[in-house]
Every structure is written in structure tokens, then in C-alpha cells.
Amino acid sequence: MKRSTFVRLSAIAMAASASLTLPLAASAQQVINLTVASSHPTTIPWVGFIKDVFMPEVDKRLAAGGKYKVQWKEAFGGQLYKANATLTSVEQGITDIGWVFSYLEPAKMPLSQLSAHTPFTTSDPRIVLGAMTEMIEKNPAFKAEWDKYNIVFLGATGSDTYDIWTKFPVKTVDDLKGRKLSAPGILGLWLRGVGATPVDGALTTYYTDIQTGVSEGVVSLATGILPAKVYEVAPYVTKVNMGVVFSGGVAINKDSWAKLPPEVQQAMREAGAEYSRRHGEDLVQRHQTAMNRMVELGKGQNPPVTVTPLPESERRKWIDGMPNLAQEWVKNNEGRGVQAKPLLTQYMAAMKARGAKPERDWER
Image 1 (spheres, helix red, strand yellow):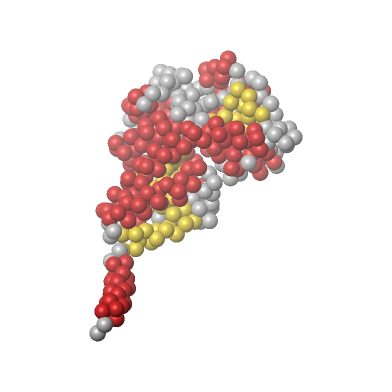
Image 2: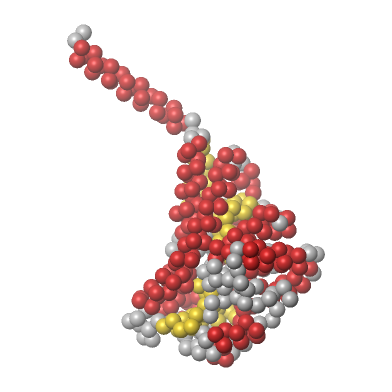
């Protein structure tokens, strides 16, 4: 046989051999089917980070191990459930993994409302996310609040600092008296010190609520208002800087979790931690960018979007005029048999250790 013919036949044989072995290697990788869902669309930053950070981080870790691969079935943007069913949908396995909107669940998850009862503590989301993650992972009472609903906490979500968007200009806290303002669940408490009437709502309802007169503005955050375009119907932005809250987290149904190999569970734990870290960093950077973008997009509307800081003396009136929400949180939870006062102390210590400087002493 000529050498050129031998070389050609050898190459063909090697290619054929490779084509036979590749499917065998691929078949050795176990495929795990998981549904991931949310009530809100991926244009909302903390939901978008599930798709853009959490899922790729899981995939990256599993690819390095070579044994497992997740086949994701995505159902974002309310395809399976709405904002009022984020907890029950993960609990019941309607989705395997989802974003749990904990501060819309004050009755079921009262401990998770702690940051909502300590406003004006910090405007840095990284501080709140770190402190709440520590509480859930290390404090049995906080951990049990998630475990009891058949879910495993994977990563924390939070907000940038809260301000108000209204149909009318706000120069003093007295301008808010008697006004109806939309707020998500428990955050309606923040309006008690200024005489406004809270209207329960979420980013998915704010635009229509204002448009139809259900409310006259919202207590909300720039990173959510921008993609929801609420500034179009509430162009007066008053910078109050009420602080950051823990809003929930990425979680997985406990039955789904139990079926996962340890290597996949570990990948999800690590991906959840990375999700929380990058989510916090992103919120810090995104807040002012969102504010600037709203002004730019709204300059041609009538009236145009304007951003005005609430005078510091008026902010002080708001802060001092609020009831002691933290002590109310303690009392309510102690009524449920929880030793809540030490939990408040532990949480505030975790916040201060990370650099928080509360504008009100909520422990007194």
C-alpha cells in the first residue's frame, strides 16, 4: 500500500473512532431537569441576575466537574404565578427554583421583615444582604422560617435605597398627608410617620394603579421604577433615602433539593453566594444610573421627570415621627413565642459590623 493511501485511511479510521467515543462521553454526563421561575420579568435586576448570574454560575461549576448538567426550563415574568404566590409556588413545587418575595409574606415570614422595621439604617445593599444572609445561615430561628415552608434558601435579594415617586411635587412631609401611596406589603409601615395612606402593590401594578387613580404615587426604588416605567405617570421624584431592605431570595423546593447529588447542591450553594455578592455590587452602581436615565427619558414628557432631595430637616421629621417599628417587630414576634429582642440585637450588630450607621436607634 502506498504511504499516502495508508495515511489517508488511518485518518479516516481515527475520525470514525472519535465519532464513536464522543457520544459515549456525553452520555456519561447526567442531565438534571429543573424549572426556574419568577413573578417578575428579567428586566427587574434581581430577577435578571437569576438568569445571568445564578444559572451560569451553576453551569460553570458543574461543567468543571464533568458529571452533571442542568437542563433549565425557564418561566420568568409571571408565566407560572404572580407576585402574591412566590412562596407557595416554590413550596408546592410548581417551580423547582424561584425568587421568593419574602416581604409580601409578613404573616408567614415575620422574621424576614426585620429590615423593613429598621428603615433609615443604611443605603448600602451589600450591608443588608450580608447581614441577612448571616442571620438565615447561622441563626436557627431565621433558618427555620425558610425550612418550614419546604424551601432551601440559596441567595439573598435586596433593594437599592427607597425614595418616593408622585404625581405631585413634594417639598415637605406635610405634602404627603392624606395622600394615597402604593408600597409593597410591609413597607406601607414607613408612611405612618407622615400621614399618608399606604396602598398595597408591587412593581407589576404600580403604573396602572397610578394611572387609574388607585394611588397617587409610590414608595419604591430606582432600579425597579426604571424598567417598569412608573416615572411616566409619577414624574416627581423625591429623594428621601429611606434605606435598603431585604426583599427575599432565590430558593429551591426542598423535595427537588433532596434529589440533587451533593456536587450539584454544592454548586448551587456557591452560585447563590456569588449571586448575592454581585447583586449587591450591581445595586450600588445601578441606583444613580437609573435615576439619571429616568430624567433623560422623561425630559420630553409633561411634566418632565425631576429629582429633588427632601430637605434634611424634613427627613429628620420623617425619621423622628415614625413609631418604633423595630420594637413593634419584637413585640409581635415574642407574641408568637420567638425570643425576638436578641435577634434584633444580633441583626443590628451584624449591620454595624459591616459599616452601617443607623439614623435612629431602633434597639431603644
